[in-house]
Length: 81
Image (cartoon, rainbow, N blue to C red; front, side, top):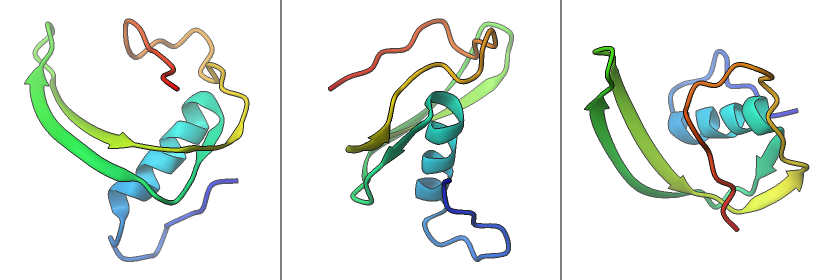
């Protein structure tokens, strides 16, 4: 299971959230050497604001698949290796 950060301070909050979200969404784990690439924000068609934060990650373990079933929070996704 992915490490829990409840009750801890906010050190490495983005990295911990990224690991948790990757595991929940596509059931993979990444190595510890996460590299921050960039961030941006934009507004989508319905007026919601989005914050896009990009990290470069190295695959560690798991067999990637869509763990969210029919729920598609985005139009497309790509596995890059």
